[in-house]
Amino acid sequence: MPFARINLSKDATPELVKTVSGVVYKAMTEIANVPLHDKFQVITRHAPDELIFPAEGYLGIDYSPGIIFIQVTWNTGRSVEIKKAFYRAIADDLHVKAGVRKQDVWISLVDVNREDWSFGNGDMQYEPK
Image 1: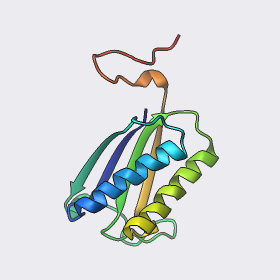
Image 2: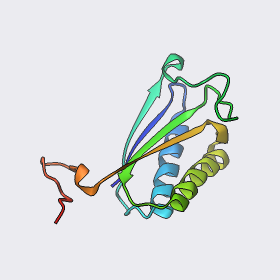
Image 3: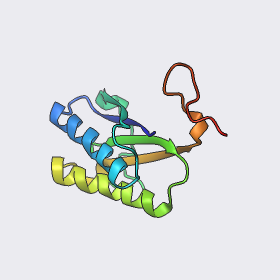
């Protein structure tokens, strides 16, 4: 039940948007064991002044205007190893498939409980038992 927010430049091509969406979904299903068809994403394009990052870099990583911010909200419980593999798969695949600089793949994970979701109808589909 992940929910991905993907933020990138307004100049991103439709092909890049499609590739980023697909790469994130692929990593979710292949690395993080998310069920097939569990694909909820919001992709937003931004003007240059709306994607803010440190021009001098951070933690030895330099960024460019091609930065892509990816935030995934998902259920808690995945191991550090799974999370590391998830980050790596997305950065590697975006680099290979779309020429995105690995430095420009910024990912944040938000762990939540199963009861923190409503998939519609105002119901808590995963109510604790």
